[in-house]
Length: 165
Length: 300
Image (tube, rainbow over all chains, first blue to last red; front, top):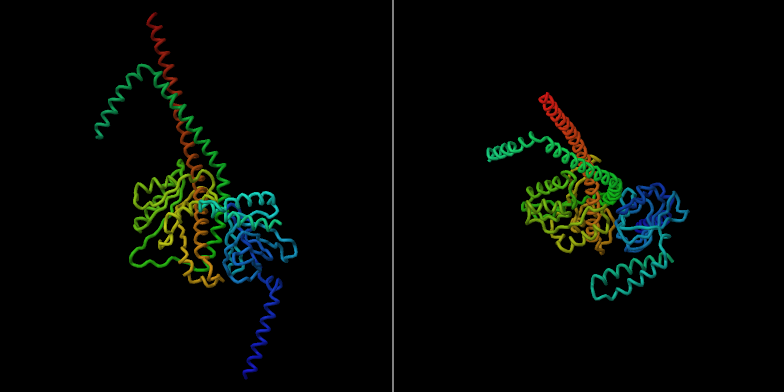
């Protein structure tokens, strides 16, 4: 009896494992992921249907497909990659954000709000490098506020530097 | 008092009328000067109307973008079923953030919001106020001087930005212990249509309230992180921004309407005064003609 149930559990768990493994674009495609990407001064995506979105969450980078479990994540400085169209075959659109929040609603709507977002190719590497140097110089400032501001600037710029490489 | 007033007006009128009768030119000059100044006022109000109209499209764009930010926030609160902790018998301390701007000449927009805040104060006297914008500060200081804890000015010169609102939010968090309030609400002018606005209120949920909302477990949230606290600060900033953007749009359209009305009124006055001016001129000429003719006929 125990064996049987164990075997059944095993088979069910292996089944589940295989289902988890196969949960991919095909299954996710049954539901569609809608992206709401808004900035305080502009709306980049308004409930637009997309295939996948990669987020720089503070807990680590994550990819969002349709039917993602509802969650709310604080975003770290980094690149948001948006795969438009039905399948993620085309190259993603990349936006650099300095931080914000992302919420996955139960109905597969992903809302991203950020203070600023710019296409990654609009940044100049030289400017980033010189700004980073300036900010690093201020890190040891006696004024705590200045030093804290510099630390944030360095964090953002370092993320930007590694993203633009 | 009234009789004295009447007397003085009567005596003044009595003093003026013989002079006016003796020399028609004085009143003619007066009417002319008055007409000129009204024409200048009309020019000013027309220009202000045009300025407001050109700013309106930008303000409405800012409002639409800020509303989207709002929508993302409120969707989360809807799903999480976040709501205020029901107040007990004793009324706990509340915080009201009232947002208008520094600039006037836009009808009753500031006083309507002040009225809304006063209604709230009457209902719930144990409320602290943060006034954003000089106009609302003045009005609330007059009625509730002890409740105004913090005030900001320099608001409403241009469409509000995230930088502005984050400076305001940082100052609020620094000066006021936001977590100690049972409820935080933002008062702002909501542009219902391009012609009308009405004062509106929206809540801000504190970190504790967010965490204790019944639907919080629907979301997969890292229990170690300080997400509720960060979310509170971020949504305070973005809600202030969207309230400012909506208030700005409401104010600009109210100013355009106010200036439109002022220009129309000035137009009416100009019409009336030009008729008066022409009649007076005619009367003066007729009088002179009568004088000349009587003089000439007396010589015959």
